[in-house]
Length: 562
Image 1 (cartoon, one colour):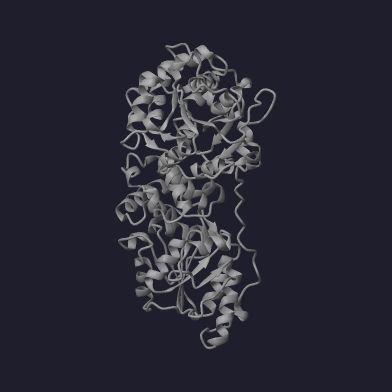
Image 2 (cartoon, helix red, strand yellow; image 1 turned 90 degrees about the vertical axis):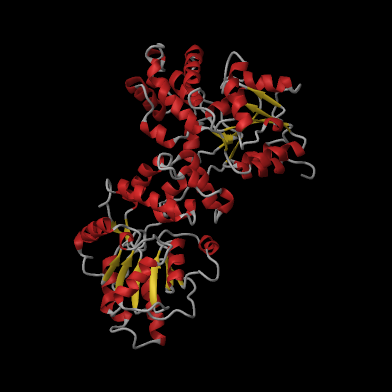
C-alpha cells in the first residue's frame, strides 16, 4: 500500500468501478474494441481524434497516432491488457463528449457479441466484499457499462454469488454523460442518501476513475490491479486530483481499513481483523511487453551523409487509399493469370505468409486479419505472394496502379513532427531523399498535397517505382538515388523504411538499414520477420519506433555540435 492522504476518513460507503477493479472482462472488451475501431471512418470519428499536441501524455500521443493510421489498438495495449475502453476513448477524443458518445454506442453494439465472459479480477473478491458488508460498510457500483451488460455479468460472475452484495448500482444509461463526468457517482450518492465527502470512497483502476472521484467530491482510491509502476502512476496526476490511497490488491484495502479503525474505532460494526478472510493472492501481473531493443547496433553506426526514406507508412500515411485499391485489385488476379504464379506454401518465409497466400488463392481477397491490422504495404503483400517472380510482381503493381487512381489523393504526415525532422537533417548538412515503389504520377501529387503546403523543397532526390526496371526489394532505386547525388553506396547512406522489403533493398545496396517500426511489432515478431537465416539473411542495423527515436539516433552519431 502506497501513501495515504491525511484527509482520508474511514468509509461510510465504498463505490466501486466494475471492469478492471471488481471483475475481469478483458477478453470481451478487447474483442469488442477490435471490432469497433475499424468502423471509425464510417462513424465520422477519424477527424475527431485529438490532435497530437493536445494529448495529455506521450502514451496518448502514440495511441492517437496508432489508431488514426491502423484503426486498431496499439499492440502494447493488447499485450498488457491494462486499460479500459473508457480510458482509450478519453485519451483519443479528450473532452469531445459527442465523439465519445458515438464511440461508446458503437462499442456497445460490438460488445453485445461478446459480453458474458466475466470473472473476478482478483481471487477472493467475493470474500473480501462480504467482509466489507459484515463491517457495516455500504457497497455500490458506478460504471460506464450499460445496464443490459452489467446485470448479465452480475448474475454470471462467481456463479451468481454477487447479486446481493451491492445496495446500489448505477450504469452509464442511468445518466446522460460517461465518466469522467461525475454523474454516475453523484447518482449513486443520491440513491445511498449520502453527501459527498472523504468518508465515501470511489475505488477504481484508472486515471479516469480518479478524475471522476475528484469531480464528484469523494475520495478516489486507486486500485492498481494492473501492476502499473509507481512512477507511471504518479506521472498521471496533479496534486489536486491525486488518489487518496493506492492499493495493490484487496489485502491492501483491508490493511487500510484496519489502519483507519485506530483513529475511528466506532466506525465499523465489526473490526476488520474479526471479519477479513484469509489472504488471497494478488491479481496476476500482466505479461511484460518486450520492446524491440536492437539499439546496441547504434554504436556501430557512422554519421549519415545521406538519409533516404521510404514514403508510404514511413513519412506519410496513405493507408486508406492503398487498402481500398488492394481490395479492388485482387479479383483481377484470375484474368491476369496471377493466381497460379503464387509461391508454394513451403517457400513462404513464415506460417503467416503461407496462410496469406492460401487465402488469396482461394478467395481473391486479403485475409480479414491483414486488413484489420493495416500493417503491411502492397509491396510486402506482393513479395509474400510472388517471391522472386519479378514479372508477376510487375503485373500486380500495374493492376494496383489502375485501381489506386480511383482512391489516391488523401495523404497525411505519419507523425506531427516529420517535417521538423526533415528540416533538421538538412540543417545538419545531411542530404535527404525519398525512395518509393509508388509510381511517379501518384508520388508527385502526394508530395505536393501533404500538409496542404507540400514537401517538395525538403528533398534533394526522389526515385519512384517506375524510374527503374526493378522495384524494391531490388536495390536499383537506392543505387539510382545515390548516383544522382554523385555519392558512392556505402553505410554512410541510411535507408529508413517500415517493411522487410525496405531492409532487404538497403542491405543489397550496401547501405545502413534503419527499420521504422511504426506498426509497433515487438521483439519476438521482429525476430520472426528478420530471421537471419541462410535463406533470409537480411536484418536491420537498427530499429526505431518513431521519429523522436530516429532523431535521437542521428544526433548520437553526430561528431560535432547539432
